[in-house]
Image (tube, rainbow, N blue to C red; front, top):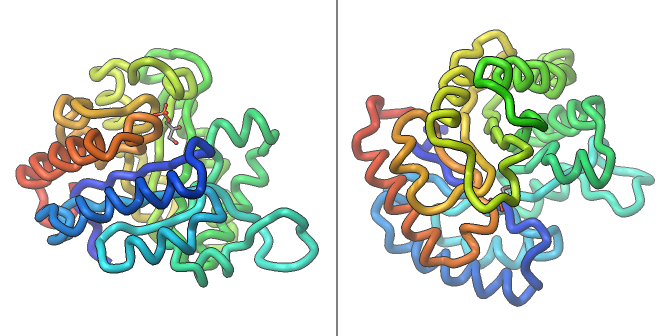
Length: 263
Ligand SMILES: O=C(CO)COP(=O)(O)O
């Protein structure tokens, strides 16, 4: 499948109630139905709600270009895994994306590199595009941040590589210190690290898009230009008007994309 020139993702984390999730999705679907860059596929948007809202927002976004996904999955496909949700059910529900390894899951639920690698393989095995989250814990110079991220990526992709799986993977680089902060990481730092991450070519048989997350909001994409393939949004997409502004910025960027197929 042809990739959008700019990819935007929104994780709603656990911020919204069920009804708030539906109301927000209705407003975003309305934007997506009319935005030329979304209708023509130049700007892609995926939305990751809490599990119970997946089916309902799948209906809301059904006649739009917006893809849906989940914020996590089990590394096993079925069986005695109380409380877990497997990739086959996510695929059945119409998910195209699944987030893996977010810093909050590592921190609060003690997710390990081994579990994250198994989840990534489970996603690919079930035809889901992993949104692989990674990022350095402390502020580091760009070269050290890239080296730290590279190690995390090698670990996260190891099981998929061992099983000779391939496919699209969204690399959602989120410096942990920039998540939930008042402002994103400095523009020049984001640009340099994303450039470095896009130069990593020895990670396996995957097609990567590198998107930045961590207090990303309106204005950032225009400032970064073609240094990134897109953004992974949290709080600053809660207002549909702010998300529309970011989609406008993505559309402007897509229109000046150096490549017809990939930013
Ligand atoms: O973690 C993030 C996206 O998953 C970023 O969240 P914030 O933009 O709210 O910091």
